[in-house]
Length: 275
Image (tube, rainbow, N blue to C red; front, side, top):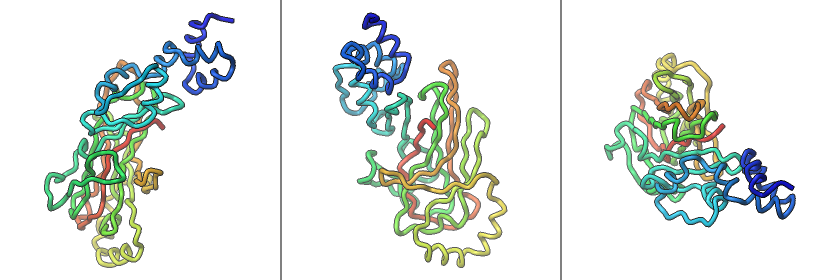
């Protein structure tokens, strides 16, 4: 039998899931698989910085306990971001709150209102009252993410019962890295009331037909339900690159071509998570 330190080092080169399985092999393997030597390798290299930015105290007695704690979302940076680790891989994911996003005219109460939501862990979400120009953008830097990993970005939304004008034209979604657009598609926000949608199509019909030619070509995406009571729309995917590089990633959704009034959209934030 190899010394425990050697087994710990070997296990640290595998994955958190493999280390958990190793605890079932024998007592000696269990001790090695639960050691700080193994679990520190599974934590992100900047875990101390992340823990220091948590809005609540993070207490742990071992690196494994810390890892498992970070597999549940924690609020960081004054509660404006949510961070977690993927339990099986240790990859990082973030949710940028609505307050972290650039939302055109969100500082004008006649267009947007800021309010708490029981469905969100953030203090506030943004609810669209009425506007014709819809533009939402979030930014993240690749050094914040796990290296050499494919990521996808999602806009987290809900639709109120007063929603109107949201899907007469699809929204344009963009994902930019550096100065290059790497993804450009269209997305439909959810219209739950089919009768209301049909009436809006009749009312705005001519305008909708005239403006459809302005919509970008690309894959059509649709909002899908999540387990947490929100819906998500994919904005695009990108590769984080190695630890040496650092690029800014911009993720956006826009509907600025139809000029019809729209309202009833609730924004929680943008999630960036491993593919």
